[in-house]
Amino acid sequence: MPMPGRAIEYLRGEHNDLRNLIAQYRRSEDNTTRRKLFDRIRDMMELHDEVEMQLFYPAVAEAGSDDVKALIDEARAEHRGVVDLIADIGDVASDATNPRFRTAMDALLVDIEDHLGHEETWIFPVAQQTLTREALDRLGREMDRMKLAADDRIDHISRSSAPGMERLI
Image 1 (cartoon, rainbow, N blue to C red):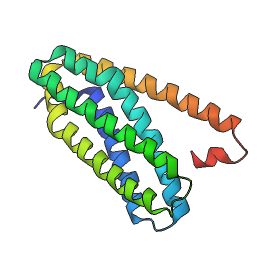
Image 2 (tube, one colour):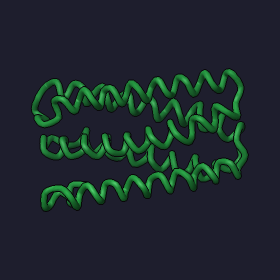
Image 3 (tube, rainbow, N blue to C red):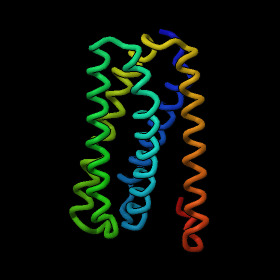
C-alpha cells in the first residue's frame, strides 16, 4: 500500500483527536465537563467538515470514477447528518442535565464514530489509489493553512469574549 500522504495523515490525526474527545465525554459524569466537551467536539467537527467538504471530497471526487463520486456523496450526507445533530444539540446544550442533551449526544457520538470508520475503511484507500502522493501532500498543506486560519478565528473570538473564556477553548 502506498504511503498515505499528508492529507490522509492530517485527517487521521483529526480522527484520533475526535475519538479522544468522545472517550473523554463518555468517561465524564460531570455535566459541566460534558458541556465543554460538546463545545470542543462541535468546534472540531466544524473544522473537519470545512476541510473535507471544501478540499478533500472535491479532490477525490474529481479524480475518481462514478463509484468514487457515489462514495463521496454518501460521506457528504453523513456530514450533513452530523452537522444537523450538532445544531439540534445546540438548542439544549446549555443544560447538560437535560435528557434530550444526553440522548442527542449519544446519537451524535455514534454517528461521528461511524463516519470516521467509513472514511478510514473506504475513502482513505480510494483517495490513495485515486490521487498522487504529490496531490495528497498539496491537499495536506492546504488543510494545514485552513486549520491555522480557523485557529486565528477562534483566538480572535476568545480575545473578544468575556475574560477567562480563552481557557475553555
